[in-house]
Amino acid sequence: MNKSFLPDRNLEMDQVFMEQAILEAGEAAREGEVPIGAVIVINDKIIAKAHNLRETTGDPTAHAEVLAIREAAKVKRHWRLLGATLYTTLEPCPMCAGAMVMARINRLVYGASDPKAGAAGSIMNIVQDLRLNHRLDVTGGVMDQECGFLLKDFFKGKR
Amino acid sequence: MNKSFLPDRNLEMDQVFMEQAILEAGEAAREGEVPIGAVIVINDKIIAKAHNLRETTGDPTAHAEVLAIREAAKVKRHWRLLGATLYTTLEPCPMCAGAMVMARINRLVYGASDPKAGAAGSIMNIVQDLRLNHRLDVTGGVMDQECGFLLKDFFKGKR
Image (cartoon, rainbow over all chains, first blue to last red; front, side, top):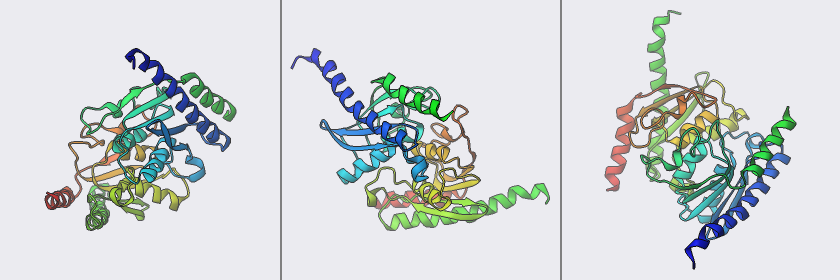
């Protein structure tokens, strides 16, 4: 395989999976939740999908990423999610970034950046901290306009 | 009430609740889990107790603090744990520290410091980050020798 094709193929696959995360985010919005969605992929197969359910469940940890990680661990029957890529529509908060390190997620792909609380490069970088015992590859900005639009649209409706 | 009595009274109460967290940690050890325990207190009453259950559940987010927060939110029927103090035997990791911010926990009391991954002052300070939308009061080192001994003893047995 020509190495030069790899980035394009990756980007295309990333968009395919990010679209699924965006569908999850849309589901959250329909349920009155801040529209953030996540999917977890191993070997090009989605093994878990989730969306933010904080209000519905009353659980402060029920962010899309944490729910997807818990679901994926259930599927894999292990807390260690080797070879997993997590797609999320919004750059993760410190809790979710920390959960990705705990689960040994291999790669993080996010959509919109979160300049206020993003912990994958914006205000801190928990997923690539050399002092922690695991680090992730990170690709940000994948379909960021679509991901950000969902959030803007949701909060516009709230005002 | 004489203000000068407040620190002593607080320390005494902190020890009472930390002892309960230590009992939870002991429970974890008996189940083959890294011995870390947590309790959540509102108005001098314990509303949730938990211990690390990562191996038993296979859930990478099943740290004592996250489980206690989820339990407390169930009891309060809300993700916002106003006026809560969280006692944990070990300084929280980034995920757990982030979860405390998400749950709007008022105060964190921890036992042993974690120089390798502690996110309440050791390698970073997520619970008192001025850029996030919530900060906690923090008291560290409460019964730290007892808390640390449990961990050392557990890992000595593992080797």
